[in-house]
Image 1 (cartoon, rainbow, N blue to C red):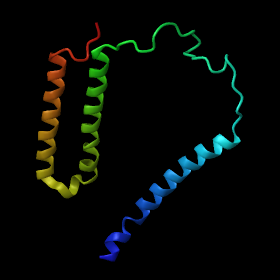
Image 2 (image 1 turned 180 degrees about the vertical axis):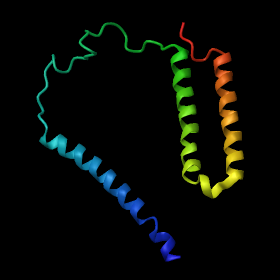
Image 3 (image 1 turned 180 degrees about the horizontal axis):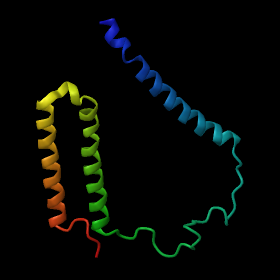
Length: 121
């Protein structure tokens, strides 16, 4: 039982070090960084162009659709990595399961293409 819990020790240590580094960097930069502010420095800046109007402009739904589809297909591709690593151990059964997975992935992709989800107007 103890060895099972000890297997998670490196993950816990990495998490503690990562969070500790982020917290130390934020606190350290607030103490060490300059604290000069001016009207010109605090002004909004976007790619060298003066900001004009309201920043709450509505985005096209197409933008969000493409972003969600990217995340969806990206996550599905990530599932292929464990399969590729354990390809020999999974044998023919794993190949069939990955074939079904790929078939569903391609069907979903063609569905998105048929609905013109990736076309910009």
